Length: 117
Image (cartoon, rainbow, N blue to C red; front, side, top):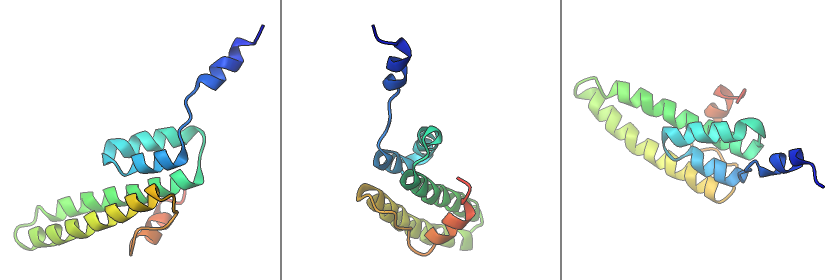
């Protein structure tokens, strides 16, 4: 007879770090889900991409606030959003290709800001 505790520990679903990293880039809800999935068994690759995605979300919130300023804010927000889309695509591609490569320009700063994650 086998111990039932053995089965309950094995029944917990474990996600591939690459999958968690990709989920982190899929909306803010995906970022929260990735953070929760990576919380129990901290994987360095998944945590790296969670940090990158969190940085992109914070920058997007900043652009949203800047966008509330008439004319100049709208222009800066529009141009920043295009740049942010580029950064998001690069981060997602790196996660898909299983690379721990920072997003251009801001990625190293995100690593410093969120070193505790």
